[in-house]
Image (cartoon, rainbow, N blue to C red; front, side, top):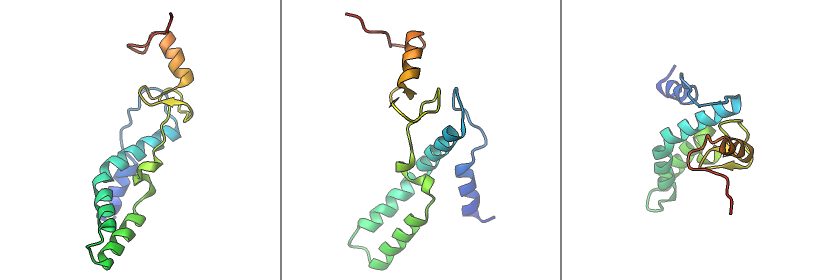
Amino acid sequence: MSKTAATAANLFHPKKLNLGGFVNTRLIRDHNKRIAVDQTEAERQALRYMIRNTSLPGRVRAQAQLQLSQMHCYTRPTQIKNRCIASGTARSVFRDFRLNRFQFRMQALAGELPGVKKASW
């Protein structure tokens, strides 16, 4: 196994997962994507800068574009989807709490979210 293949294997298959509550395959995949994006962010930015820099020779820019296109799709920040950590759903997720609206309501009413209480006036 080459060094890049070993690095790629470590990016997408972490040994220990501590995601909190509910765990399903979509949450694990999203967790792996987040790790991969964090680890390759600097490299992706450098390649994108090289592609946009018109003062560089065309060959260098083309090589950078080829390298960027050959990177794994999990390294793209657009692949990350906000998912509820309690239920794993991807719809109506509050970013601040990483919970969908139903789970947010249930946990807020149960008093499990610090600083959140039902409004009354």
